[in-house]
Length: 76
Image 1 (cartoon, one colour):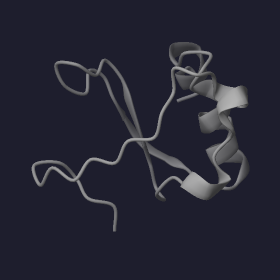
Image 2 (cartoon, rainbow, N blue to C red; image 1 turned 60 degrees about the horizontal axis):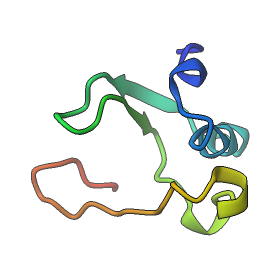
Image 3 (cartoon, rainbow, N blue to C red; image 1 turned 90 degrees about the horizontal axis):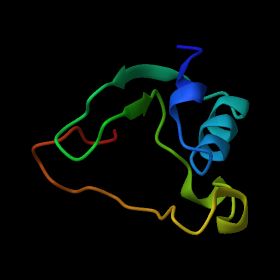
Image 4 (cartoon, rainbow, N blue to C red; image 1 turned 180 degrees about the horizontal axis):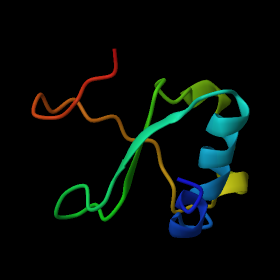
């Protein structure tokens, strides 16, 4: 899974690095992860929104979205 960093956009890399630094682990990588999502990184623990890097660190094209669609996995 070391090649995940090479596949992430520069805007998403700080979020990945932050999660790994706080001890979160990658459970799996789905590639593709649906028709509109070429890559999904699934962490063991839910992402912590309050500790996520600021928009200055990740870029203005990154935004927080929570999916409540029952067809997909739910954080537990």
